[in-house]
Amino acid sequence: MQADLYNLWNRVKSGISDIVKSRTFIAIIMFCVLSAVLLQRVFYLQIVKGQNYTDKYELQIQKTKEVEGTRGNIYDRNGKLLAYNELAYAVTVQDTGCGIAPEDQAAVFDRYFHTTANTKHDSTGLGLTIAQELAHLHHGEITLQSEVGKGSRFTLKLPILE
Image 1: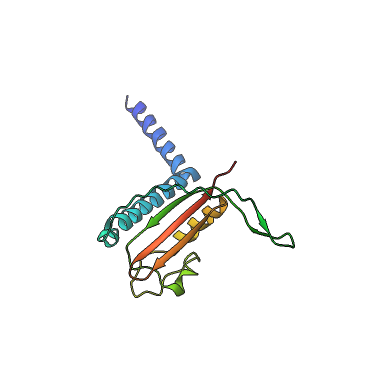
Image 2 (image 1 turned 90 degrees about the horizontal axis):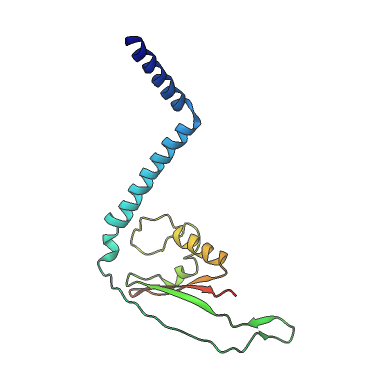
């Protein structure tokens, strides 16, 4: 009986030793640690720091349907395309924050960009860059309208593909 327990213990011990020595175990540990860091960061940004942005939060939902005339493409005398009609879906997000200064608006989609405003933002400066790249991958674009002291409006337009 005692010999069976000893053999069982040795098998369990060698099995655990094999698992710990494998690359899979290291990958699982790294995945768990990185997931924990990611969850902590999301919690911190959404719950703890999110309060700063919700003090003046106001929800507005507006549904509009714009149908453009079907005039076709417009070319100059050299055959260069000047304008075209394209049906697209649009989603607009508007806030009532501090707004973005006109001198910063051209660079707002640049990687690692932060506004020149006096307020400190806890961000990497990659969010709008990634969003714009994803929009471009889907043949769309994100546009910005902003006024200092009144807020910003971002519009995502994605074409309706046939």
